[in-house]
Image (cartoon, rainbow, N blue to C red; front, side, top):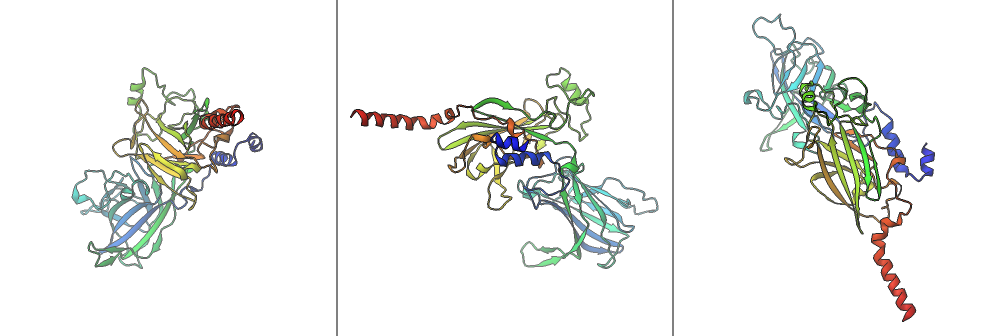
Length: 446
């Protein structure tokens, strides 16, 4: 198939991008964010009669992948018989069996506690710095100030020195579903803390780190988004591939018809706490569709319109983002109504852009319906060495939505230049042809 497409004139870059999107990988390496991870830092700050007080922080070092509501859940298994006496900035989801304690009842006695963030509006005496965001953890490139979450935990029945404390095992991070795989805790140099005036430094008694990495195939077997394409030079609209994220079946509740008179009742009665999308019935069955339209060809510039449509009736996408790869991002001139940041995953090659909404304007992608879309236009300057409309060059190599790789149409389905492709350039060449004809006329008949 690849040989056939090459003979048809499809570019090698499009072939590589398409086939790589078809091969699922359980590895957590992301070529567009090779160093992305969530690091959990555990700082022991104070010893107590039977244990210690620690601050646990989650740092989201991923450029564009974030955790949105209902938020993260962090779990581990104690190495000994530790308990949690008290917490600030977070809470254990279950107390467990604390029946052997008669008076002072611990916060959690489970061998494998699971911790969640507290909600905004928590009383101040229960808060610490970087807590209480409802588990929302934004990405490093999009919102670094809110890419950190912390909670304080008082641990009992534990060691009281660096030699007797045992690090927990089997860390898990849910977002809130699966997707992240965490390594073993590693004891590192104690964290240093600086006073506000910068004149004094203190340090933790003990620090260990845990690194968690994301894999889309671990998170869920089916994709979550797809890409459709169109252009001004071809009437064909290339839809998302059929069954990109699943196929319609006869099972009730698998999807909802957008024009159904019972739509409102179905959406309201469905389990809104479920993480499974409730999508509009389409041929692709994806919660999200990204449409790339090559809109206008100017003399020195060309213009693209991007539209993101939500087909999920169950979820608003807050702090959404797109990552798009195309060689023309090195010549991006103007972007309308989206924020933009160049990612440069390969160092010197500027072909990857991160796009997201403007706060209080379009940073919230509403549920499926009339308001369930956001859109913007991008203006690129033409590079004479590389620019062309041939062989699908004007379309993106790959697109991510909220960190998940979207299903691209096959390259042989892309809108092609018509046989009389010179008409695309006629608006540019016509003035020069007219001048050349006039000069020739004058030279001959002068």
